Length: 245
Ligand SMILES: Nc1ncnc2c1ncn2[C@@H]1O[C@H](COP(=O)(O)OP(=O)(O)OP(=O)(O)O)[C@@H](O)[C@H]1O
Ligand SMILES: [Mg+2]
Image (cartoon, rainbow, N blue to C red; front, side, top):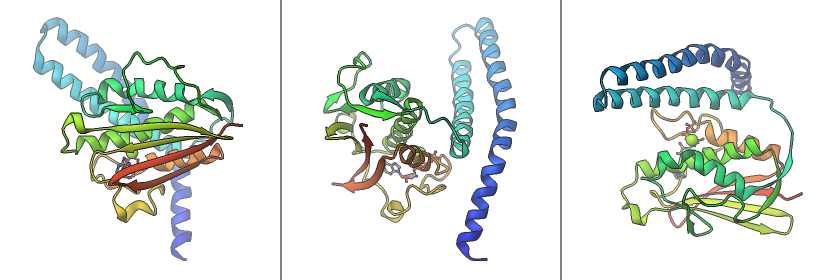
């Protein structure tokens, strides 16, 4: 059996197994989440403003969320999903996604949209860039790219004032082009540039499983758009092209 066939078989069997495994993981995870919330209320009632309890609880929550995200990402890769495309304002989908992560990332990663520093009261209809998209799926792409950039900023030696995740939008004829460019480190490792969108390609030892960009590529492909990754002046660039019609 040649290498490619073995690989294909492996991927297919993962596709069949994933939904049942993730279901098995999700059930105790939900149970853990609910109990932790109850425990938090009880503990804070008993030991008011105890910082070390609060910190331990936050760490537990972080861990559970991390597992949830991995489970969700793994599920997403094999999900069939709907094809309900609508004309949307891409800028708005971007603002929605940034709002979701901003609290968590704001001390590490300043985000500039069309060269303006993002602040939470940015109006979601401040600019209009149209495209025909499945809104929820596109927002997932933004979250994947935002999380990847954030991971890079966590490793960055740069001062906060010198940091930038620059997101630019532009409209060209029948296309909307969105680029994410971050100056956290030295860009994407050359050794993975050619297969960065393949599943399980990751340079993150323990924290990453290498599914984010694979999911992003699948979503963009479903939209008949394009996604590219390259380095420019030692900065990682992810460019997405979406059709406006
Ligand atoms: N902004 C970026 N700058 C530099 N390298 C990046 C950037 N975004 C992604 N990469 C590289 O691409 C790899 C693949 O990214 P991908 O999102 O697919 O997986 P991951 O982040 O490693 O794990 P996962 O997303 O599954 O948690 C990363 O491990 C990293 O090496
Ligand atoms: Mg990732």
